[in-house]
Length: 504
Image 1 (cartoon, rainbow, N blue to C red):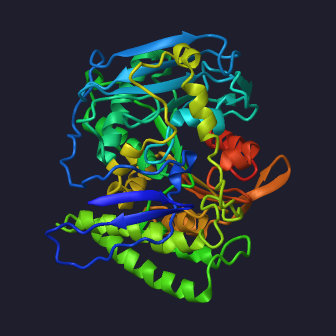
Image 2: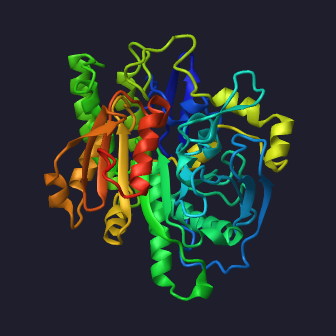
Image 3: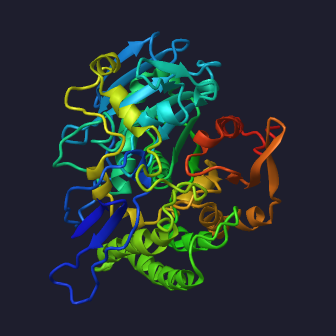
């Protein structure tokens, strides 16, 4: 079993206990480490979970137009962005026991009748996309006194219709039956497809609209899995009665974790070779970390197999990454693993990226009423139960889905802030270069050009045949929080298939 990270003073401890039947010796550890994706809401884990390899949900279910129901509140004015039509609601997933996915939909500020559709998936696992509306890329931010919201001029709704989706069930305002939980990307893809069928039934005007699935962090798992499921489903079914055809055009992942076998061991290089000439560990520590990185790689390779020990290898890989690779870089001094430049307060920590403010605002009675939130749903920025459920999946690689997407003409954008440690730019750059696909040689030979926004160089771009990698300078894990003008410009260019470097 696994005891996930828990707060011990100002640090976090990560402990793996060996199953009773195992003869392999694995020591218990209690070294400082920090849970990175969950700093949106810095709450300690309090549960002990048993991890088992459960059966995957069937992937062949078809969703007829009458199978999915939805309940929404249509708000033409008064919330977040009164200049556009928007709604909040639930889509019930027909193949689940009682799962209801909560979404927020804001039409484009430009031309909602023709602009493309973005569906945003926050990471975690267990992080809420509703948080993203107010703290990342949505139409507004929350006032400090919780009295209301302030418009965001850099909203991704400037030139797109956008859905922010809380998934899986239990995340944000979504809810469901605890006995019917999700734990891997087969579940995520299946559920996402069901949600899209229900949402598009409600919005026939969007049936043929170009769809772009976007996300960040653990969205590097979610986004390619959801896109791949859509392709597989639509290739397997051709009749209109089999469901609404989804016009998938692209995916975008910000500071994502996609190819774990490449990315997790590569994190070690950030300790001595980062963009800011900051040495995060001593020479002796670095030697130990290099050895641990090789051990980690071995565990990750086994994790991808179907061997009886695969789940155990996944757990041990996650432990090694948290404790032996990330841990030493962020503990002496206490440093923000989402922005290596920030030295944090021993008493106040590194901040929560608006998590507590968002929770206080969204759990107000009048806010919940306005958004039509179900009484069963209590908002948390991060759901620890979901994090626990996906702990084996965390070490799984989903890079195998990307070549299929590219071959189908689905464009892929990776954008990465270069001050992030946990999903760093070097690891993302490496997997993009190593990706086995028809355009590999052309992509690797492509020139690296400056990313120019408003006349200023904001990063670097490599792009060829539908695959694009963008390194964003002076940005941590959440690029839109550091440089909102760069993020929205990049997304607008990607949506319209313009040159990413100059936008022409």
